[in-house]
Length: 369
Image (tube, rainbow, N blue to C red; front, side, top):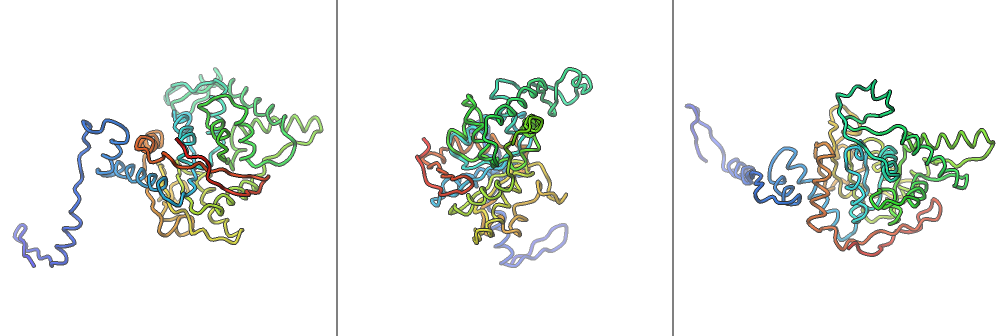
């Protein structure tokens, strides 16, 4: 036991306290050295030795690596929300599919619609949040924060969706089945929908109606209605049924949440719904999220992965991390780290064998190269 003096006050720590103090002060924060951080992977590694959200980005990247290297081959479910296409992340998301570092996607309808918009050859344009929005309205320009899109081209895409639906048999479809068929028709190697369809990777959009794809389908519905014809429908509960089968037929599951909203909750609820099949999966074995939503407002988008444990959505023993960094900044860092460090190489794709709404099996396919 040692006695220390500070400003005339004697401070006494027990040997046990000194031992604990030494443990807590054993790992110094390391300064980010940009002369050695030559690539994204090295930068994220440097972040992991720093503090605040830089360290959290490093933690998320580490969790991702564990997902990919786990010998039990967890099924990685990616949930995406927010203005990711407008923010320039279309190819980042496409590459996550192309390089097999995710196995299924749950997305807002807006992200997939804007992917379709670009697959048709249309662009997002640099704008400003200080724009004269009344003037933009007069020019048929829509604003997404600091990004512009052409409303006339949106109309064309809406009609494309309606005409595509006209070609389908008038019966119920899950969003997965509908989006697979839509993606097969696109001719754009950089498209999220096209790339997922090419690899047979499921994409779900449980709130598809709440998007411009939904607007196009409403146009189609009206055409069929006024002509007295039966119509195809998107069966949202079938989405629940199909995604839950993916969860229960997987040895392990892992979750990546970009922003929050419906995709985050849908991936989590698929774990809860496993009881329908008489199975308790124990929750996701791995999870990380990149978000700007704070937990203290009580909303799901900002809720912590620790909170999700109380629902059984994330395993009590899960490896998890969260970085409170806007996704147009954080996602390229985390994905870039994974792609550059090679932890994805040799990982087998999953082959999903669907018979209508029944998932007959999930098998290992060829390794990603």
